[in-house]
Image (tube, rainbow, N blue to C red):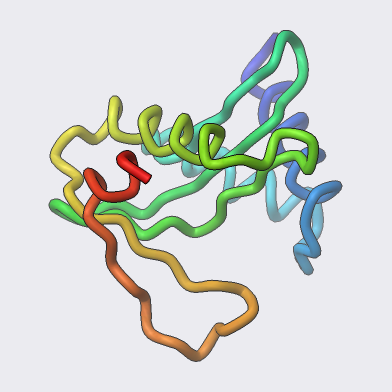
Length: 119
């Protein structure tokens, strides 16, 4: 599979599992940037994408921009796999934070990575 095919597959996965309001072309551009920075994590089950997460990393903190998990695979285990995959690329990250779509005006809440992996 080429990088362009992977990016297209990731974009299709995200668009089919969320309510993103961007075009596929724009999402592919964003994914390409995250792949170039190493801040896009993808989990496969055989040939199928089951989870994708994008991060912005700054020093010892990473803000999770999105974590999209196929409905059939939604579990703490899958989320922990995404965290571990991201940490393998950025082992200096000690805290993760995110903004919930349901509450976009709330401040980012930061969690210790070790606590998230223990849950």
